[in-house]
Image (cartoon, rainbow over the protein chains, first blue to last red):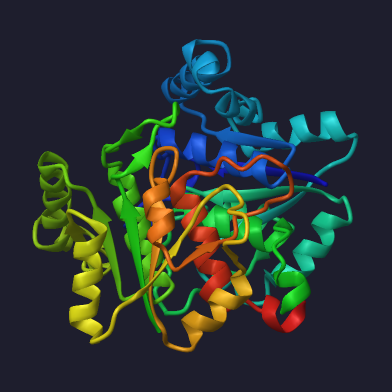
Length: 191
Length: 191
């Protein structure tokens, strides 16, 4: 499996559909790293061009990978080792290409149905399990900017729960998506 | 569907297997409320006997249900309307019984396989969809105390990702579990 994740802080939308750079939510770094480790992803990129925000992420990583946190909780260290920081999507793509020797397909996620552009979980699951190099992109704040959706090779279909309400946090949405793509529950055998 | 969730802050374990009361993580309240709303649960109980922690939760709820937050983000208000605070598991059970006219089955979650006590996702999904009254319990910190596991009618099987690493945050674990139990992705048709 050669699956990578990217959490985009720019360009994303705010509530009013303005283009913004969102602030880092430290818990996101932890939750994505732990998810990435659980579901066997090869890397997780925190994507932000803001230097002070990059510094914040580096500080968190240092604490948990070499500082006190690394001794306090080695499981967290293992997860945090997956995390890198890049300024842009392009930089994340370069790092993946450098490691894998080929360019990743970009798969964007979005809470809104993208007409004629939706890839099913089943189709993406097949790609992921067939060892394609894939960068799965998640948007913070009110979601990925249209420019990024346009750059993506595919847009994954939204999560449908049991209701019409679709306002999950990006952390919990990522959990559901990874489980649908690579989880090995017995549902595959039993359903 | 008559599914409820409870997030237990006491009794739970710390890293050293001591019994503790954990502190509230405000993001948990938001994430569970949004998950609960997305997946059609009827209520979410924040269970803590500590008065200052109860006060913190009440303050968060007030902000988002009647204060500035309610005007700022009505989707969040809708989700926060699901949240109640109780001091104990018993109090949460009483509230459910009061509303449903019958006692809930308690289903505990745990990251460790509970020998001979594991209910599969498939079995629990069937119960949930058959309209049984169910209280699904999640533990904060290092997990639910043995006393609560013993009180539970069932213990749900752990989440298996793709690796042996099983250190998800309780927020993301709850997301995966709810999706496995009630999500209506096309996986049911396609897998």
